[in-house]
Amino acid sequence: MSDALGDLDGHPFVRVDGEGTPLVVVVGLNDPLLRVTDALWFAASVAALGRRLRRRGYPGPVYLLSRPVGLPRDATTRTLAADLGEVLDANDLAPANLLGLSMGGFLVQHLAADRPDLVERAVCGLAADRLSPHGRRTVERWRAWGAAGEWGRIYRAGSDVVAVGALRRLLRAGTYPYERLASVPPAAVDFDVSARASLAHDAGDRLASVDAPTLVVGGTRDPFFSERAFRRTADGLHDGRFVRLDGLGHEAVICAGERFDRPVVDFLAP
Image (cartoon, rainbow, N blue to C red; front, top):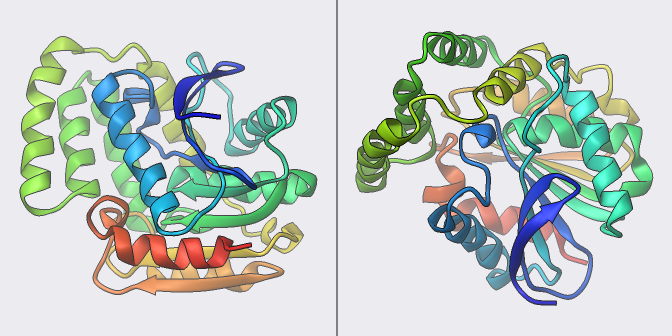
């Protein structure tokens, strides 16, 4: 097996080499705006996360998986999770460890509840059982911008969420030429489908059905979830635990790699 990028039944993926139980990383809300294989530079940056997890001790292959183009208009987080489960099953990736990032954590919650045979351990990275009120307002605002064709505002708001300091400024600067090249993203409809699915997501009554050991990792300054929501999610799980990242929000994955990765890799250690 070697590092690769490709497609699994319509799901674009980047894979980082390894031996052992696969770790499948399920990405967040903005995935339709730039899927993991849409640009080589982005595929390389996505692969960097996989290599980081491997370098910090995760032994198995790491798959970073996008959702397919052309999502059903009535898709929910549960139906998207079912589709993901079929992909894992059909491609001999199960049982797998799952790391859901933000909205990806919503899919992980449903998949772990509905298909326990596919999930060894699960991590809800920067994801609670539902959006907090301030998170709902943010996603509703992004939907409105998308409906108005103001994609540049979404790109820049996304940059502000996932990065700080010089990296944030660099990402924001990069949105301007990208905005001109893709004034209407090819998967604009998929973004709205994903946003609606996120707004409708509420796994509060499903958590007790999750048998897999599950880690919730969340920051005290997250723009989409409160600390209380992270704790509520961990407490609702059959075998859940919570790691709090003080002073961090959604930028934790990119800008505080050691603090985010260490509890994840320790939890997933065989």
